Length: 143
Image 1 (tube, helix red, strand yellow):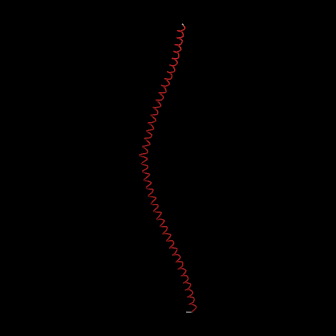
Image 2 (tube, rainbow, N blue to C red):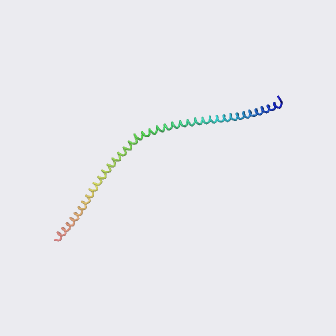
Image 3 (cartoon, rainbow, N blue to C red):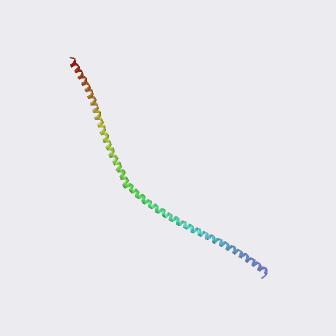
């Protein structure tokens, strides 16, 4: 083989070595990126785990709230509605009582008005009698 051919083969080998070196660098860069992506995936998985845990806590909180709401509904239905009914019943009793008081007051006012008229009539008759007595005294004393 000629020297020239050996030099060409050597040049080709150097070029191939350089290409292989570049490819190794690129593969190293890709491996580094894959490592970085794997770290990000691990971080994302950790965040997903945290989110799932929070969702679990939220679901538990919602269940607790639902239980509390059911107890409140039962309380409202059982105790508060009964108390409201009792209040309205008491109001009806008081209204009936106030109506009877109003009627009693109206009857008393009628009696007072009647007594006032009789007192006025009696006073008028008394004045008439007093006048007649004075006239009779004058007639008796004048004779």
